Image 1 (cartoon, rainbow, N blue to C red):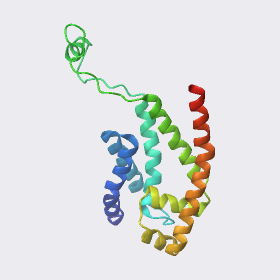
Image 2 (tube, one colour):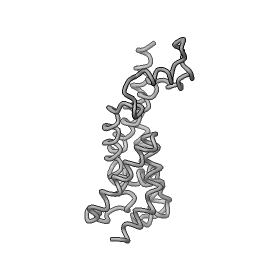
Image 3 (tube, rainbow, N blue to C red):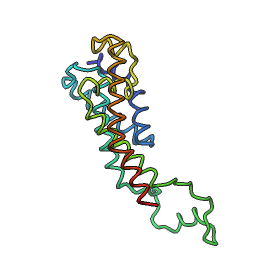
Image 4 (cartoon, helix red, strand yellow):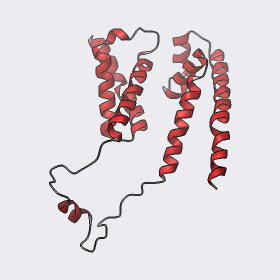
Length: 192
């Protein structure tokens, strides 16, 4: 049991990096990774060895990230210990009603939504890849495993790896062209 615990501890920084990229919130990322590692420690027998431990953990982490997003989408941030809004108003606003400090630029919400929509379409396209191509693409591009690791894990040659990755990328390009870029142009034209 301590052997898997040390392996999980070694993979924690990589999982945390992935969670931070997805959530953009340090505390939420920490929570999601902790829940992932706890789930792995509670039921290590679920890891059947058909993939690398990191691949299995990222699969668990993706579900924990979705749970975290759902949980926090309803969260309202308030300052702890305040009974009323008067102290908060005095802290945030000058007596003339103007902000003491300008609020941070929130960016373009429509752009953020479009990015999320793109990620959903990309995920669907990756899911539609044939089994081995999808697995290779995930291992190489999302889990950032090097070619040698992938070839060893799947018992394939480097040449075969590059051919399958090339085919996976071509399929992804076609899928994105059909499901994202052609509709994105139509949607942009409709908004003008």
